[in-house]
Length: 119
Length: 113
View 1 (cartoon, each protein chain N blue to C red):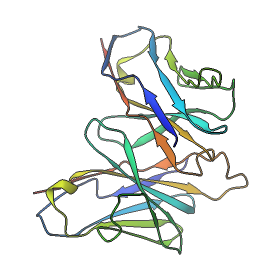
View 2: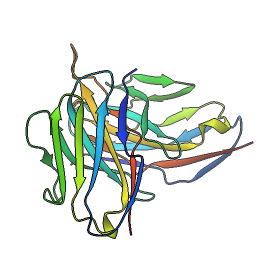
View 3: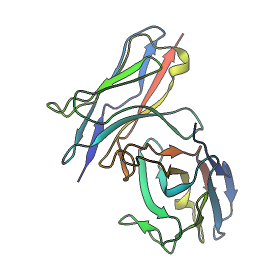
């Protein structure tokens, strides 16, 4: 089946640094990728939707200058958390949808997530 | 806007017990409904889905029926195993998954031997 790879799986860094998370579709071309954030004991919150070759669409309340999303190719999207602070610590998950004859019933394929800890 | 409400956990069951995790939704039109499972330290995996009223999604012994009259999509399994321990998310999408997905808060299931 379709596989989405997310890297790194875990990252710990100092406050003020920027962190890049990669999301790759391994066996299909992902026309649309989604980035979610999951708070402890909470559900996934959609942060943004990215389409290959165009600017990401951010959900209300998500700072686009804080969370930079680049979907440069049909197999790769990146999320960069700029000038990260402890409150940015969270579990970030990407998902992807590929091309197909019938797009309407395609489920999203999720990566395994990235645990980000800012000290 | 669209929303999904599912029962709070954690749910603790003995092995081979019957499982029900309740899920109700609020949405316009005819959304597609999903159950996702998240094992410890991993991302989400699609467990099952239903795209129209009265459809029954099933996978790995789990099943859920799309009930439009009660706006529900309860997850059931007749005999749970220790390996079923995970967090289960009910979700909906207006576009069958192509559009953004709205998730419930998740229900943690713990199955003890």
